[in-house]
Image (tube, rainbow, N blue to C red; front, side, top):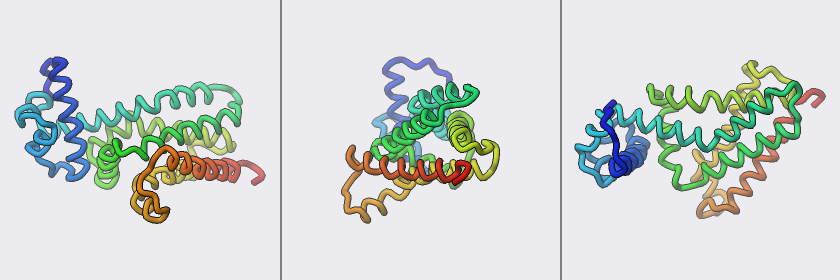
Length: 222
């Protein structure tokens, strides 16, 4: 990785290259060309080796940017989860509220056009994982997935390490992700032309219903 000091102008160029690279890599994977990336960023092609070293290093830099983006957006939820789970008997109402808050934040992010390229990048990595996915997974996805699993386990009394609990957690996340990965289907089925604040709120209300079904359905005596 190139360790050349970055000026404010250089930082701007670097950010433009990363944004363009996420778009190109999301669309074409590592088959994306540095020439197309530089052109989309409005930068000289020589800027890529200058700031990043190689195309592979740029790819990893994109993965790190995505990990940082996810981390910043969900750090408050993660901190709240750790604090809540550290209590001997976490309040069930507080657990539900935190799960809903994190889910709403995820819905808002996944219904924004600005995050489409990020989703394409991660989706490609999910289907054909590279060391870039391991980076994202280790830094943010595994911890956040783990926190949500522990919250569901604490609410329902299940074992957080049990495979079925992990699968239930993943299924819940999949419901939310379906509104991004199945975006065109839901737009055509509903007659919506786009996701706006009102549509995101309607999606959140549906997910809230499903969260309550999951939490109550997995609880003892259900």
